[in-house]
Image (cartoon, rainbow, N blue to C red; front, side, top):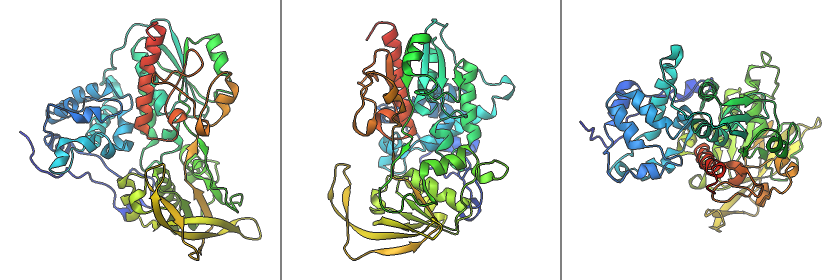
Length: 467
């Protein structure tokens, strides 16, 4: 029986007043009844454009049909064929711009809530793993080939998941003391609980993937040493973790953070639990966050939860041009983040002790479209104004860390230091593949996972002499 309701089933969440004082997850997930009701809205259309809209090509109609029939084990089995981290992607993947954007139901009402249903199946899976109730996916017998994965973020984990299923021995090298990459250090607890990231990684570990932490490739070991000593192929999925700045006066003042440092201290090193965790961070009263993407929203909402009384979000374009997910923008607005749109920082001013105390801004107007396809922001003469603040978080993007290219002879790079790779993920060094943010620049979790899966397929073909 189909549910002909044109509206999505609402997912319950913490109220704005409650959640801005804690780090608990905001959306609370579907109940069994809610999931079945939402799954019943799916038309099971013959063209299934949602599969093509998914970067990892999950068989979306089939897993939704399984949920509708209350066969959640079948649903998660279908998802796991394409996605090694469904509890993650069900939470942070921008489905509204991908699979849901092409959903046929979206032509007459709301598209199917594919991400929420994926989360439902994945959470059911997590809840039933204790005591061995959940069976591991099948994998081929070991073929004796060893693969090194550099980076335990989304592209590396997706690549590892596919390769281990195909019979390869896989070792993932992580420079930090914890696995997960940007999933662990970049996304706040209230959007993606660390326990969920760890559970998904534990599943890969049980499946046979080995993890080596505190192993900074390019320092601890080089790519050449990996290839010489043990491994038949290498996948570089180290992400884009080098923060960008605006290069305006005052950026060296105390209290001016990159979003990377701020979120890493809070998320991975648990600075919000100081002194229980010995990772201090400035607890500010008035915070300015520069940027309009998901990282800017994460930074602003994190600062609020740390005790900020007023958080200014400063973005040089209008709300329409904001690259952040609409859900994250709405959550930030509901929580009281003060949006200063069509505004750009000019300089930061410090006090006599060298701490930032004021930000000088200028108002902007939008001109013609630039290379990004968005209208170019242009300063308005005479519109300067100041804001009193005691902390700045710069969230205007990242580029790849140059440590691997600098220590890998013959590895070609492009603009902003991205590694150059062909359509198969192959780099200029034989047997070395790359994908995710280190190739494309900062993008989404699911896009990086799609690149990791593609590279896994290419590595398999390369080692079998097919490419």
